[in-house]
Image 1 (cartoon, rainbow, N blue to C red):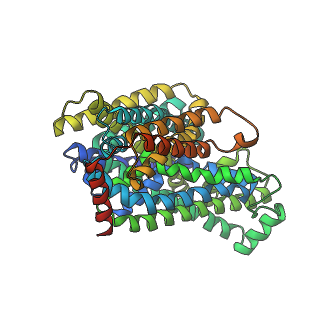
Image 2 (spheres, helix red, strand yellow):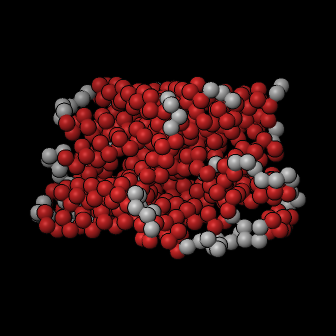
Image 3 (tube, rainbow, N blue to C red):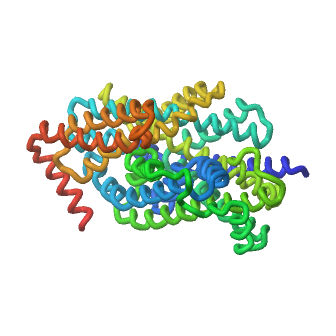
Length: 492
């Protein structure tokens, strides 16, 4: 059989496994809480691996190894910032958010938590947050479909649109059928595939070049500064901007919703250890892949034409075509895990926040699940239509959206959990200022404006939210009682 046939077999096995998990989850989903939050019965392993897989996307297997291959370890600062941010998120947000969302009206989405926690009787805060999620995540989902189409075009020579529809179709099937449980467990499998591939490639590659000493000597011989975290072009502003990516974690709905789904707040401890262990192994694996790539391709025939293909090229060089096919599937897994998570959060915002916030009519459990599935299908169709004509501007929006969510929602989440005097008007004003700052800052250049826009957006959100809350705060016995109750449950 040809290499392409072996790789095709690997893809079919992977797709069948994803659909099977979706069908399995279907029979364990009975109401809207199950569909949107797995009934708060998610274990720490599934929560940690699904959070990591839905976060990293194809950047971990292509973008990061490509950047490190081209420039050396000076590009590793963003990975450091993300790892620190993820650890802080698991440590300080996960247990409190799990507790408080249940105490505050058993909220199953971030906007509904804001509304319940801050007693927003006008529903303005909840609807605004829902609109932000709906708009940005529709673009996010669309960008993932673009990446899927590009993947099949580059790997198999398949028509871009056919590849995009194939990826979208598989993701929609298991997300629509199985809901949050299917998304979480497919993400868990996809996360295991990603980290396994990122460990296997550098380990086998190191043996291929003669061991760790030979690898080090070869890489240093080609680039004396390859292992240095600071280079001639590195600036303090650049390092600050890279590390600031970690601030985004506090406000990413598709990541922190995993915390809300944990069985108990105490399981956040195990989740943190598993999740951060996964991130460290994955980031080190990406770095190892890049270093092996430097040794192999600069020593054995010149640099790669596209640095971001270093993981794919090494997988095809070092492994049997069937195993290389599963390596390719790992890249697809990274793309699909992010699409499915964002798709479900977008659908939940449409049903739980916009429908309930605007219509204010109760739904039966069956109607809620049906409306949730209809929302998944609707968002998928819109996102696919946006991705139909390959558009790089959609992909560029992903980095902007990370900053937008981090600056708009991050401070609101932290203040909601740790400061009892936050008000609905303070949260709304801070959220709007954070989002607008990101939009405006990104268009400016030079000096301080070279700092990644999430940092000023995050800081200004905090300042405005606190200032407006101090002006609009009023004594509220119910809010105080809820705040004290979540603290008591955490320390019990």
